[in-house]
Image (cartoon, rainbow, N blue to C red; front, side, top):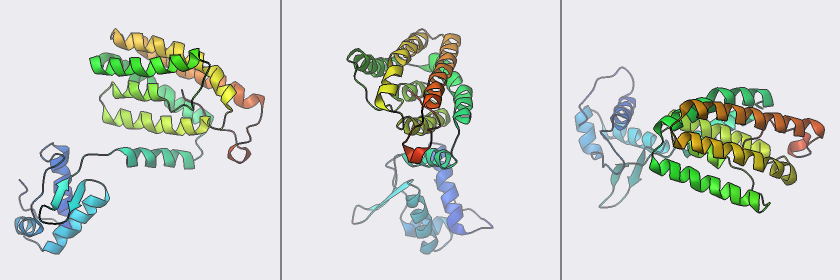
Amino acid sequence: MLASVRTRGRVSEAIVRRIKDQISKGRLVAGHKLPAERDMARQFKTSRVSVREAYRSLEEVGLLRIRRGADGGAFIAAVDHSPVLRSLALVLGLANTSHRQLTDARLLIEPPIARMAAERAGKEDIALLERVLAEEEEDAARSTFHPTDSQFHRSVADCTHNLPLIVLMNALADLTADAASALDLSTRARHRAGNCRYHRQLLEAIRSGDGDAAYATMAEHVSDIQRRVHRSLTKRPIKANGGKKPSGFCS
């Protein structure tokens, strides 16, 4: 499985690269047990210290789980994308992403995501979108409101089955949902009915596999959200976040 290699750099780094490569190619999957340190050291013609260092490095980034005891060892971990999402959203947030920058990014990213969702969504994807939208519409009918986490937009991205796009969409959703929390509940509630109408149109476009309609609807939806929020932000100061106005709003 893992043949010995020669490298100019540290042997532990070569081991890390080889294991990452095997994971990316699907040859190592979650739950797979790696060779014991002694055996891996023999394969790489190195010391157990180098292997231990490689395993610890992979454990730190969440690719391995080290278990102790008689049934222990180094096991390939299920991939968890949450740390990546949090890091990306944090970077964008710390950079004080502006309202204009956020709108530009959303218009570049979300309409193509909607188009791809229409082309790739399966029955389970459609069912999930229906459940998410039903909850939104029920809240709107009851005139109740929950702080948005942009779940419908996240679910649309899931329909693409494209991990980079899903990561980007979730990072944008985290950033804009945080910004929206600075708006008062009554202001956010006024946006809900309009958003539900757009979401219903998006669902129907995705259900029918109409990529062009999904693209156009998402573009119009994002532009409409940002226009309405811009008006809300310019009408009155927002006292949250130390008196700073939030950068945007996503629903």
